[in-house]
Image (spheres, rainbow, N blue to C red):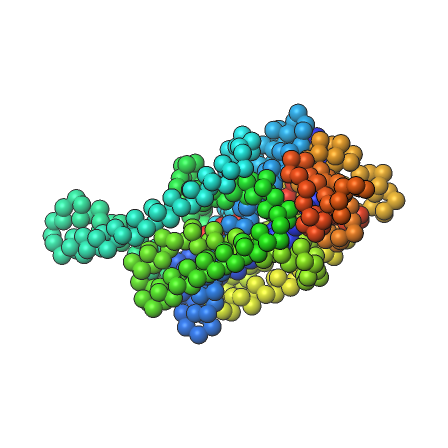
Length: 510
């Protein structure tokens, strides 16, 4: 099977992906620059007052988990895009692609940074192939039920924690605690260690990551091997599966491609932000007032899944409205370029940050910057990628890692540099409506402006002709949509060959 052209891309997905990728760095920078527990608990290291408190508060309310959730939605959408091709070898392509992603993720996690998400996306993508045929309602209701179930379990755990603490304290006062007290003591101490580690534990992590490469590799490998050896069905990974399924459902329902009416996205924005930001802000404020007490933290984070689901709906609603209304086009085109190079830009975050913060091959700044200062690094990387990504895509069809992944997936070296317009037309693959049987392509890189509203309509769409209404457009199985809604998926005539990208594809915003 041949890869698809960038003329078959859905521009809105690139914008969403670029936004999610840059937003993920707001969370990942904490893992890069501070000990793990400091991500959620600012009293561990990095400062908890002034600008540092503001940075923590905004992180918890607006970004924590939400960017990874959006990235997961887009990876799920990518599953539908890729498997919509009516070709006999689609399963081979699909599984080969995700097995390579697992390998990429393992290399990334062990060699560079423990917070990798690629491994998990590749791993759980293996079970998504047969699930792609589920009806839209199932693909939306099941993951929502999973997230609500996780919220319910979190509430139950939070209710039990004060009793566990009392039993643990009682165990410490007697010479021979009973079995129940022993278990409670072990559990409480383990939770306390992960939330508020001792100075000794913090110094061990600082020493490991500021030290030479062998030291930080040993520390990292210990963490990664523990995570990767967990059972496939571990509840700790259910949220990844849930948002992957939800992305599949949202794509099928036209939510992620801008096909729903403008009022639908306005409702998403108002409800998602209204409920989600209010909930998250109230919980974060309470946690701060309690001086980041472990029991209060367990109560606040019990609503983590619900809060992130609501806010990510608001993010999607806002971004779709921006694109549909044609405002901030300069920014959205640059976000689309970042999204088209998501794999390469994601890995570049790691290379830049580990060089700054780790010892050995880097400058060893781990734990030396405050939380607010870390976001200066984020801003610099954002600016660089928003400038460099469009320039790169004027000369190359894909980002370098997208090209490598694509070549490995198809077992054939793919063209990399752009050719002159005259030669390009001769090199393009067959038209998508012939190649994909009316399906939609899946993108991986290409040329801007992907949001040129005068360009070619995405494969599977057709502009209305005489007698079909004023500018209406149709997509198989979805009926008519407004011309304004169809505009979001129009692609520039200048677009070039491309496909399968990580952008459909984090954690580290754990």
